[in-house]
Length: 275
Picture 1 (cartoon, one colour):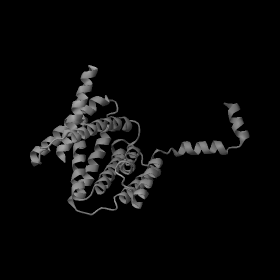
Picture 2: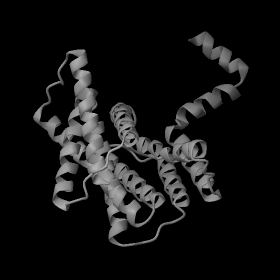
Picture 3: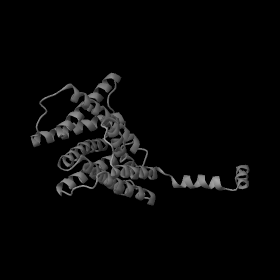
């Protein structure tokens, strides 16, 4: 599993190197502090994927999804308040609560297995830490950061493969290679979008919106794999979707618009004349 993470990161790096060569440009120079952030983000990316794989192997993919997202959301909530000075409004706390309940329903609960559960939560914490750093890297060139991020991710995953003596990939066929390349391209797009998105929303909102991946996973499963969702999965996705709506809802603008609509027409006319 970690070998796949290594290969994906290597392919992503090669793709970005090819893009820089085609455009005849070089990656931007990074300051020492920005290098540190980039290295940590790259390491955290490989760590999250690796720990997700550990939980999925020993429990089930749905449990891994729940644990990683739960850890990421809670880390983003606390980290946003402590390191970024963000305020946790009642509406955002409600959104966080709903998304965690929705994820738990989606996962149909999970079997507590001590170290496996800890591994899943640690993967989520790692993802949350990476997102906090992405928030602090909004001034950097995104393509440069993503390139170095996957270089670091490939090195970190590769060192783990060597240290753990994981079974190497022996038989290689064209279809797995094609899927791996597609996976690497999507990972690059995701890396750029995460940097773009977290530069423009607060941590709590970003973490809740990220959980919408569960909805699209079920939708794609229905379309391509003909897997019909269970009642628990449907209810869980509904709660996650509701939480996402609450996370981006601006109550003040909503109330302001409602007051304008319900205001006395004479008062509205008077306000317009004064302006």
